[in-house]
Image 1 (cartoon, rainbow, N blue to C red):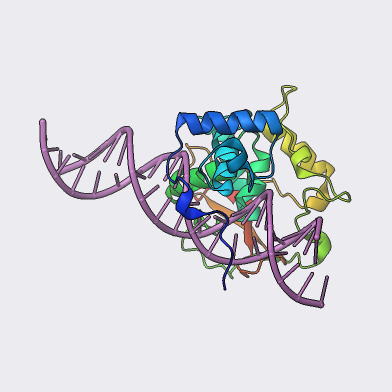
Image 2: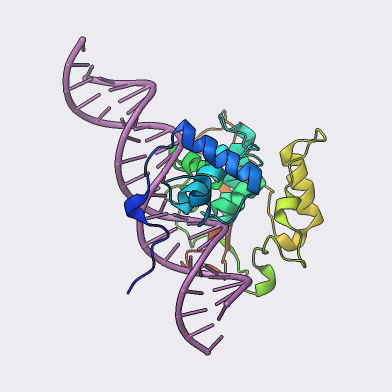
Length: 233
DNA sequence: AACTTTCCCAACCGCCAGGAA
DNA sequence: GTTCCTGGCGGTTGGGAAAGT
């Protein structure tokens, strides 16, 4: 019983990829395109699991990857969208061109979490640490299907990958996202807050908090969204 | 210099959803 | 309707690098 393994583990390499393996993978994908991950290792002459090949390509070898340090602007976007989407790294990754879900997830776990804690915010709820969740809280329940985060490829809704397409015209990503959010209120993208700057005292706290219940979520945890910030004097 | 601890990130694992048979 | 296959996702781990003692 049980699942069939995705590959013959006894005959596959694991761990860090060598330059030669990278070269083989890149050459194969350049020649045949992406996809067919299960058969790719054999076709490319790699002793790797197909999944491993896919991950290596997506997270490291893809030519459109940005890599390097995250900018403040990228951090802000990640925090904003995490407050709405939760740990939906793949969705958040679509907002940041050249960044992968894995990269964003790692960045969140190693940097942004700590940053939020330093700012006095709970990284999970985005609420001020120690703030009781049910007092002075505005709830916005988005239970009806039409309020679900739309599927990216749905013909009926804007494709978010396109929606957040990297803007090469010169306007900032934040401006672009803000304007797009205004154009598509049905996506319910509340971008009304900006992160406190580094100069903002750690006592900054949310003035209004909306709870967004994602009816898709099976965790039942819901998503917390800050819609206003004020500094405590 | 040697050792230990902490940090970071690439890679792995298990699960799930969607489509094909 | 059911089963199988594949691609994709989020959580977690392991090893190397950096920092600290």
